[in-house]
Image (cartoon, rainbow, N blue to C red):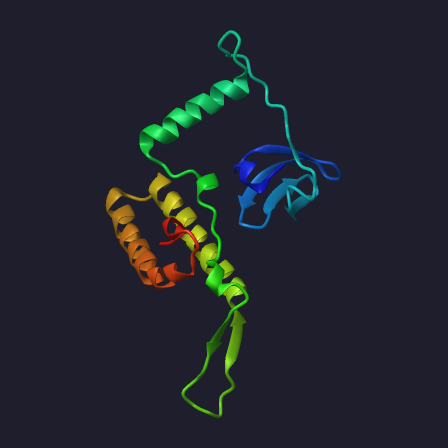
Length: 176
């Protein structure tokens, strides 16, 4: 099972730990809640499989899975939502293998070097976490509309500040 096939709350089966529920997803692994506790899992390496979820309402000749896929596809298209599978985040070729060097003004202080691949991964992770935070704020039933608006302003400023790093993305649509 691929990481992109997982969704929060999904029930899965792990060959060693048994049945579990997807609690968090990042760009490298999923955190699954098993009976023994939460564990980070690489879905492809662990050979995860989705649990068979019961279904009853189907259109004659159409499986539940196909019906759900059709409804999701129509909803995504109608809302104009970008699909995660089309937003592959890849470092532009000219930056691969490069190094970010932070040289302080004080010559007594040692410079710091960071591989650009590592730095890029952290930037993408921050962007993904900002998106999750934005979804949680917008979906909150506790926050008032005014509070949501205020928090959204902070997020917008964060996204704006991060546009500096758009030059690292291979696909410009994947940036901030």
